[in-house]
Image (tube, rainbow, N blue to C red; front, side, top):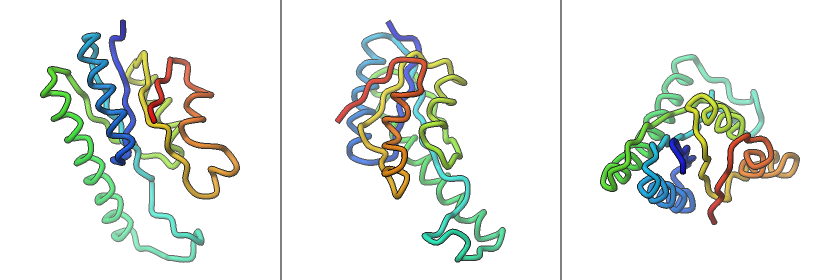
Length: 147
């Protein structure tokens, strides 16, 4: 049925439910799993530009985000391995989560995206809707949303 399933995670309880479902679906269909965690490109303060950071500080913060993302993805790989599912862990740097997920699905030739019904954050949720809604609207492959 599916050959490659992309599962999005942010480490939340709700996304862990999506991960569990994606792993089960991959195990049932013999699909490979691509676990994706999106991290911001650079630190942003509440009032953009009000907190000047040195290049060293920015690098330190970005490394923390990447290391944290890798920990989340390592847990996905471990859980998938326990079920006999081959998994690839991918950290993507982007400020627009939905675009990053859609691009990752294309890049890794996923034929299904699995994600939780979350992703609303900040003012953007009022203007654009949730990240999940954006993926549903713009993805060219089926999207399984769990809540």
